[in-house]
Amino acid sequence: MADASGDVKAKARRSTLYRLIDTDCTDAGLREALSDYYASHEDFTVESTQIDGIPAVAIWGIVGKKDRADWSAAFKSLTGKDVNIANRAAAGAVAVGVSGGPYIITYGMGHLLIDPSRIDPGFGLSFSIRSIEPELIRQVTRNILDSRARVDRSTVPGGQSIRGFGIEFYGEVVSRLAGTLEKVSMTFNREKPKKVSIAAADSLKIPLGVSPVNLVKDLHEITRITQTSSPVPELGFIDQIRSLKSSNKQVSKLELKLSEALGSADRGPLALTLPAECEEHEHAANSYRIKIASDRFEILEEIDIANILERVESLPLSERMDALRSGYIQMCSDSEGRVKVSRQVKAHKWLAFEAGLDAGHYFYHQGRWFEVGDNYIDFLQTRLDEVFARPASIPLPKWDSRWAEEEDYNKEAAKLIPGGAVCLDRKKIHTKQHPYGIEACDIIGPNNELIHVKRASSSAPLSHLFAQGWTAIEALRADREAREKLLDRIRQRSRTHGFDPSAKPRKLIYGIAIKDDATVSRGNLFTFSQVALMRAINALENADVDVEVVPIAQ
Image (cartoon, rainbow, N blue to C red):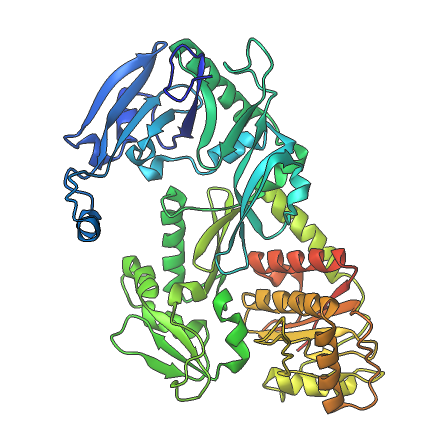
């Protein structure tokens, strides 16, 4: 292994490796994969070469300003010392046109020298889940699909099983792995077995041969593993769902499909959804300030997908998404739109959309694109079909057209449920652990079943319902104060219901109605709503809570 000075006497050196897409393995192709800015900059040199007879392009230079560091003035003000130094850093990269690639190795700030649209997204992860030791994972970074852009990074310096990180198969996108690599044939262990640490995301940080022959052998081994090896069983789920970076070329194609849907009478799988950061304010919202493709905002008492479409459908195709990204929707608690309860949330984050592209399946949610693997979808759908097939222990009555609001339905449904149910709709519980309040349920059944009801214009907003039920169960099972507050709410409506605050909830029922759909099934839920439901079911069943999904007829 090379020392800190990069001693070339070592056979391998820890390097950062990217795989390129849409790039020919020729000199011209490799040059096109470089950032135009740096490839043409006077401080950088670009030269064609060969590595073990394979076309390669090298680029190197200095990144940074030649003038003084921007903190020089503040430094002088504090110390009286006039420093004349600049922020500069070395950067280098070698693109190699090897089959199965091409690949590019970067040094220092060399990652800046690559055209971002040419980087193969998830390449490092693809290699790692096929080669890393699943019992020796040191770090996992994951994005929670249904939360407010939350990123969780867990580190165990000595390594542990992937199971120890508590990753949910559904609804969590792993974006980075670090762990131990052993069972490969590369320069660092070709002569003698040896374990090394690697880190993987879009790039792969791994020891690579420093001689031309060894480097090419290592790149061929990496190609072999990513193209022919199956993922380690414990890690295969990571390959099934991933977020797309804005630089990914698929994103521009997908956004074209979304822009077309915004102007189409047949908008297909396009709906309005509630941004995660607005979920806690949903019941308080009595109006919406909306400003899209206009210099002025308007106040609407209700909002649906038509309110967005009518503002952008007449715009040129290329301007529709820009209008949504610059526009906003804001929730207000009064009907005049004066008392704001949420911040101004960019309008594009209120959209949900699904699309197929080049045999792949994608969805747009909370302003981000996600790709979902076929195996993931098949497994998800099979599992949810089984959940929807479960008989209802409490059949929920048909939604009569006279009941315009959910509260109207809940009041009447509670009267019709045999055994004595109580409507608790819009009755939040406030505790020390939940000072902003939680909605324990819309209806509590005769045997303490927590029933959460939602009637939506489409399946897109239902992820809020699923999260709400999960949050309520967590709070009631962990906090006696929450159970006592729930008893108080029940007693305000009924003196005879037999709720026992010493007993933890054991059953949760999701009651779902979708406007213009006679019945609700797994098939008419958006993919991300299916993910949110399955994630909630898994968490609840792991807590020994029975879960039912009951379609409400209309």
